[in-house]
Amino acid sequence: MSYYTQNTDALLYIGTSIADPLPAPGADTFTEVPLTQIITPPKNTQSVGFFNVTNDTVKRSVGGKLGEQTIEGNLVIDWTTVPHQNMFADSLIAGGRKRNWRIKYPDANDRQLDFVAFVSDWSEEPFDATGDAKEHVAAYKLAVDGAVTVTP
Amino acid sequence: MIDKNIVTYIKGLNTAAASRVHTGNIPQGSTLPAIVINRLPGTTPRTTNNTPLASRTPFTIGVVANEFSAAMPVAVQLRGAFDGFHGTMPHDVAELTDPTDTQVFSARCTSEPTYFDEIDGDKTLRAISQDFFFVHSEI
Image (cartoon, rainbow over all chains, first blue to last red; front, side, top):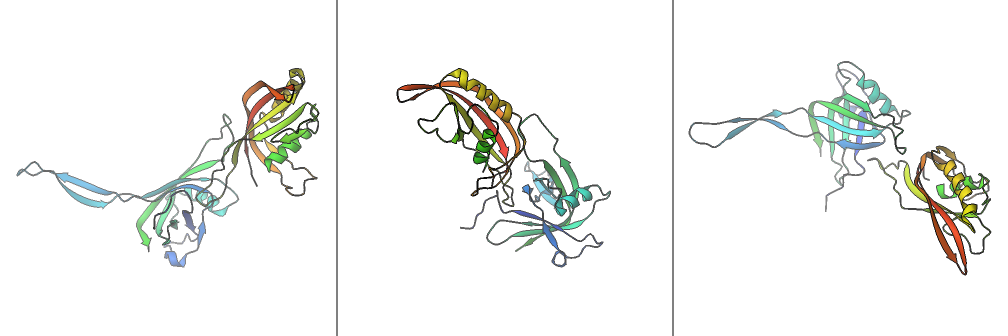
């Protein structure tokens, strides 16, 4: 049995280097982003072109390139942690600050995704006194630059 | 543990129940009024890193007395103390097995006082029950 569950032990890592060009993931140092509640892996969606021919009524389609890929999620903010500080700071840099990022899956084979991305969105939820206390959460979005490498 | 710290906190309120604050049940033959605390099912959400976040725990806090008129002032005092409370709920300094403060992020009264009678042997007791919802650190 090799299936796994989605609610725990999926981890997001942020690379230390901000060099240009970035080092390969194997040469970078990664830090786990703490207190993540949701990590949405990038989706693989190709652009599709449809066309008709005069010979029949059957629709044809051709595949295009992979669409834009993003990693979206949210985390419980802890301003004492360097990854959260860096994600907030990166989101303010015009043009985007690219880093190596990594997602580790909770499966038995330690599947992982490596990619270059920048924080394109950091949205903190409002302070809200209308209900019970809850942790202050930020939604983040990472815009992937280039290909996602899957290991193993 | 918040249960013990609520007991300690209530004892510090100097209600008419004094230190007669119990978890679960009030011992038979206790002097009244007395206060009883019951923890109801709650949750502690976790992150994908498996880190526990704040616990969400409802409690029922009852005041038992011989007359409603004796129970009501204590219930009102409890409601005033817990509805809107947030801050540190310190542990009992004499408690050596669980010397942990509880950080309460919010507490509110979720139900108005409910009156009921309780039969204890040949005696009828009067009780007022209130529900509170705590969001708190849990050790």
